[in-house]
Length: 68
Image (cartoon, rainbow, N blue to C red):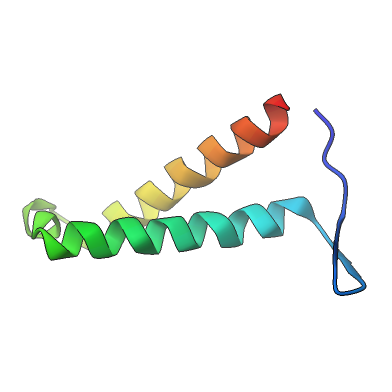
């Protein structure tokens, strides 16, 4: 497992911050799909559910990147 800094327009950023941004974008897409189909109505606490989905997406992306 080797994470190295990412050069973003001359600024080195931690790879975890890039993963966090990508996971947030993926979660927003999943949230819109769930909202479109009305799935968030059946969840007890929608904000907590979306946060949990974000954590699952972020940890999955981290495991995939770490396995390379």
